[in-house]
Length: 386
Image 1: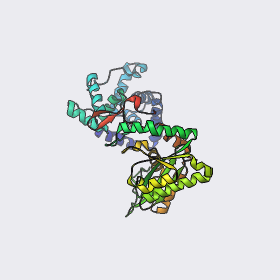
Image 2: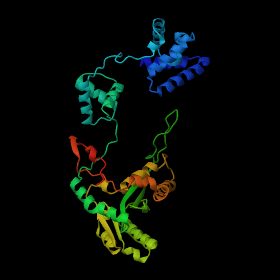
Image 3: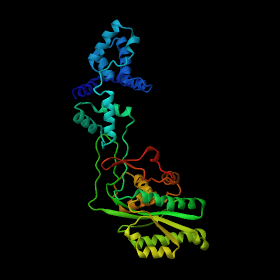
């Protein structure tokens, strides 16, 4: 901590007339590192040049942001060694690592089989398990050797049935995708999403001080029940600010029916229209199923706890990511922003939605438990397509 404070103080103590030189020196150091020259070597090279023009040790230390002792040692080495020798960092000349190869192997295996979200947690584990204290940067170097990096975790529904999901995909969903591609059927994915106005989307802001958003005293929710066309990526919606019930599902089915009738004429209604949806009570009651049958719309319910098979879930995640990081105090404005994002699904944003929603579906029948409650997919099955 003292070393960091000394460096910061050194930067502040640079005289006004030397700040221009310091700026150039630091830019040169940064430029050299772009060519894979270690920062230590880049600092040494600039220091040698400044020593050669007769600058004092204290002044050089301030300009290149290092200690006076480092410059003094370098000046002494220049008296007895060719400059070329000083610009070489010998392999293995640093301090011996506290972690040998076998221990690094064990640490990597421990990390692979447990939940660690920060380098500090891993450093604490190493201290507790192996009685070795190492820095977070040292932990990072170990992990890099084993290609271990911080990855976003996935969620696995506790009651999901991988076999039932595989069966639904192979016997129902994939054949429907093929029919939709060749034009013999229209395939929709239906689900509701609930957007809460307030500070849910505040995110981060650039600035030299932390900024605070004013939050709302109450909560207002914008409910969107949508059907996404697998091919065109058009989204047909029913919205409200209260609740989504069976009545709204029926209204959406009628809206789908009318859309197909207006787009393709009376005879087009005979074309197969399939809607993939989950098992929510308001979607699986008699009123909804009877109306669907009357409108010649087939409802294909995914197995319980299978959000991965309802591809509109990806679209809702995309919409929430596109909402500007702003706290809305006007509910009408909040609704308009969401409606605008949704309306672009089949035009301006179609390429992006196409990349999110295709034939590839995440399945979990090859999943392996590596520790209690923690699972991974074999590498060859991480991107499931068939």
